[in-house]
Image (cartoon, rainbow, N blue to C red; front, side, top):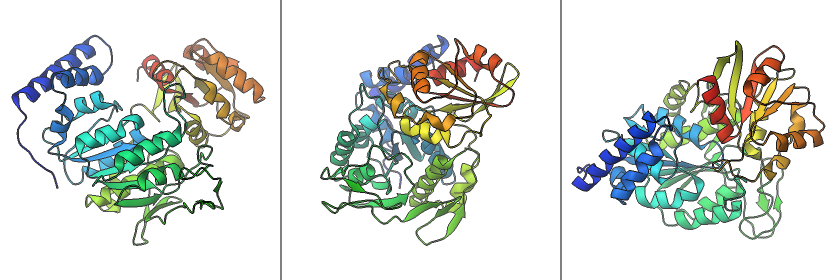
Length: 412
C-alpha cells in the first residue's frame, strides 16, 4: 500500500531541519506549538516539500466544517492497529501545519491529515491520498469563508478524477453533491442535525424535500444515496449488516457519527470494525475538547462550538438544568470577525440553566440571549463566572480563540 520510500533530497532535508528549528524557537518564545511557522519556513525553502513528505505514506484526508479534528484523531487511533501513524493531531490544518506534521513522520505508514475546507483540493493534489473522509458542510466564518454551495462546488471540481476512495456522509446533500464527481465513494449514514444550509438543491437550486431521514429534489431527481455504513443508536452497522457497539469516552451523537465514519475509513485499510472501535475508546479528549479540569476548586468541562451547527450539537450533550453554563465568544481572525451567526443559534435550548457570558464579544452574545428571553449574567473573566456560578460541574462552551484563552487560564 505505501509508496516510494526514497530518501529526501538535500534541499528537502534542509527545509525540514529549518522548519523544526523555527518551530522550536516559537515554542521557546511561548507562541504556541510552532507547527505553522515551522511549516511556512520549510515550504519557503522547498515549495514541493508537502508532496515529498507524503510520497511514502498512505494518506487519509479528513475535511468538514465540524468534527474534523476529532474524526482525524479517531481514524489515527484505529489505524495504529495496522501500523505507525503521523497526524496533525493539534489541528494545524492548512498546508504549513500539515507540512510540519508530516516532517515528523519519516517512519510512519499512514498519514491521517485534517484539512481546512478551503485547502482540501490543493492538499489532495499534493499528497495523492488513498482515502478522503467528507463529514459535513455548514456556514462558518462568514466574513472570509465561501458560501457553502460554492465550497461544495470547489470540492466537486477538485475531487473529479481523483483515484482516492471517498468516504462521505450520505445525509448531507452538500457533501453528496461534492463527492458525486468521484468514481469511488463509500456512503455513510452519519446523520445531519443542522439542516439550515441544505434546504435548496445544490445541483439545480430547487427546494429539497425531506421526508423523515430521506432527502431528494423533486425538480432534478438528485437524492440521498443508499449508505453502506450507518450509525444506528449506539452501534455501527457495516456493509454486511453486522452491528458493532460504539463505546466512546467522548460524549454526544456527533462523536458517535464521527466514530462511524472512522470505522468505515479503517475498514478500507483492513482494520475490522471491532478492532477500530475498541481502539477509539482510548480517546478521552481532543486538543483540550471535552476535557474536565479543576479550576478554583470547581470542575469545568471544556467544549468547543464555533458555528451554529456546532452549538446545536453541543447543546445536545451538556448536562441538564440546573447545571451552570459559561459561554465565551470572541471574533478574532481565526474565529471570523462577523458574529451575525449568533442569531442562527437556538439559545432557548439553554432555558433553566444558570448562564454566564464572557469573551471579547460578550455584549453581542448578551443581546442575543436577551432576545431569546433567557436569564444570564455578563462577566469580565472566567474567574468571576466560576465564583458566581451555583454548585455543580460547570459546562464551559467557547468558540475557537475564546476556547484557547480559557485553556490557558485553567492551565490545560
